[in-house]
Length: 180
Image (cartoon, rainbow, N blue to C red; front, top):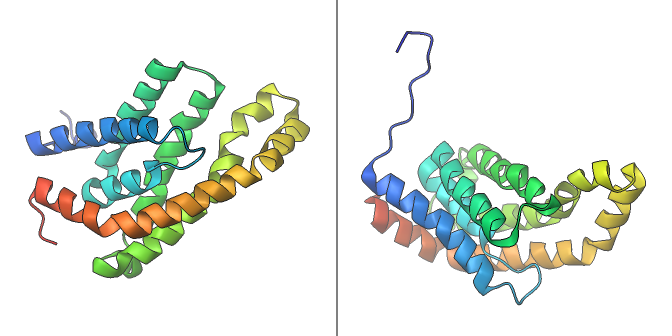
C-alpha cells in the first residue's frame, strides 16, 4: 500500500455480524409490515445503524438494497433505493455530530429527522421517473399523487423512531459493547 492510498476501514467480527444482521433486519421488518402502506422501520433502523457504526452503516444499506432487488426485482423503484437509502446515511452522519442528536433525549430530534425523511422520500423516489415518464410533468404528477403516502410515511417514521429509538439503542449498545 503506498502513501497516497487511503486506509481501509477495519471491521471487527462483531461489526461484520451486526451490520449484516441490520441489513437483513431492515428487509425482514419491511416485509413484515408490508401490509400497511408506507409504514416501515427502515429509517429508524438505518439511523441507529449510522449512530453506532458511522459510514460502515452503508454496508447494512447495501445488503438491504440488494435483498430488495433480489426479492422484488430490479425495477425502476430499486434504482431509487440505490441512492435514497445511502443518502439517509449521509444525513444521519451529519446530524449525529450535533449535540441535540446525542444521548438519551435524542429520540425526539431523531424522530423529527425521520419524519422529515419520510416527506423527502417521495420527491427523491420519483427522480428516475423524471427520465422515464415525461420529464418534469411526469415527475410532479407522480410526486403530487404520492403526497398522502409521504404524509403517512412521515407520521410512521416519527412515531416508530420516537417509541423505538431508545430501546433499540440499548440493544445495539449491548451487541456492540458500548455503554449507554
